Amino acid sequence: MSFKNKILRALIATVAFATAAATHAAGPELRLDKAPLQFDNASLQHGAKLFINYCLNCHSASYLRYNRLQEIGLSDQQIKDNLLFTADKVGDLMTIGMRPAEAKQWFGAAPPDLTVIARSRASHYGSGADWLYTYLRQFYRDTNRPTGWNNVVFESVGMPHAMWDLQGEQVAHFVEREDGHGGKAKHLERLEIVKAGKMPKEEYDEAVADLVSFITWMGEPSQHNRKQIGGWVLAVLAVLGVLTYLLKRSIWKDLH
Image 1 (cartoon, rainbow, N blue to C red):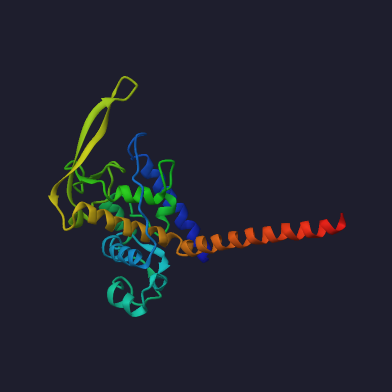
Image 2 (cartoon, rainbow, N blue to C red):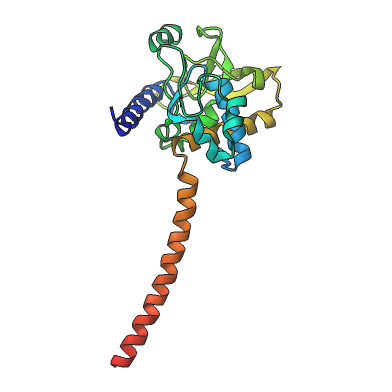
């Protein structure tokens, strides 16, 4: 199977997961927080560390090789010493050892590959990065769920809160309101930290922003350079357009 076909299959699988997730998401009043993305090397390196320590245990990123992390300022030796836990070589893909059948048995569904998850989760509510940023900050304790966790953005989620030790434990306070159709609907009033984690709220939000920045970068590592090059190309075309107009005026002036 060609690399392009593998990418296409990853996109199809991730979009399918996103469509299924949307059926469990909160209602039409869902509002996503804007993700404060940062694509500098320090933020991406911190995000890579969080991703490999907290996400790569269950989720793969099997269309990205470890050596692509050189593009965010890491050397091969730094990758080997600090990030190479599930592979033998920096040229290996970022895969996991958990089998899909086992994952489905444990979580109800196999955790999706995250290489292109930020691109697939875009919706009319906001970008995929906004969805991830909000999702990772809105887990709360729910004793009715098999994992003991639920999520405001993705109701009845099968995934436990992987970073609870950093954020702490939240509880959700809901109220019932009229749904406009003669019935009642449950609405989130607030989330409350009842057991502190290793990070205060502001620090945890910054860590999640770095993680989401890395996941967004991972879906298209060249996007930042592409946008920078695109800006320069447009500027050059604008200058050429002005010069072409002046040349045209000069030529037609002599003809008249």
